Length: 202
Ligand code: FE
Image (cartoon, rainbow, N blue to C red):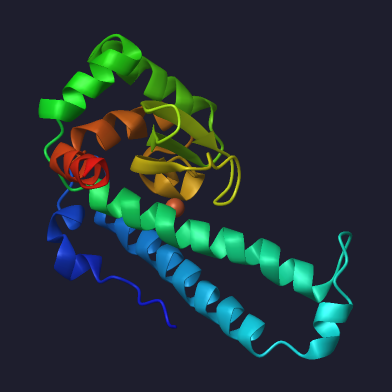
């Protein structure tokens, strides 16, 4: 199995026409995404061809096997997180509508309250802020990820991903993350978030 990197220049040309997130940032960011895809493939291939002695030497402090397993979660996380992020962006901002708007109001009180919570989540995070549907709680949750592979919620699917690693905004905003978050919401494609939500509700 080989994971293919998506060509977002073809899939979503609007990612290179955003107000507040530059084409330079997008070009560099896509390179990082492609790196996660190629490292995912490299690690998966290494695991397929792993010499028997690497199974025998598995160890929780350090072992080549452990390193591959840990970094596989980071590589796959980096691949998946960015595919949601790039697919969420390149829109016209605004607010959610339909069933998603109702669910946000039900789970957070109101859209404004959700927005405050999400912005604070993205401000407090070191890597990612996600809006996810939790199948067990049967509600939407705003969650923090400090790395590509930290703090996942089991049995929950992110429908909105905001990258808050410095590479997502330093070229355009320096350390001023709040300006980037304004731009993120200005360019958010709520139709994409809504479609993700509808697909997993089926
Ligand atoms: Fe990123």
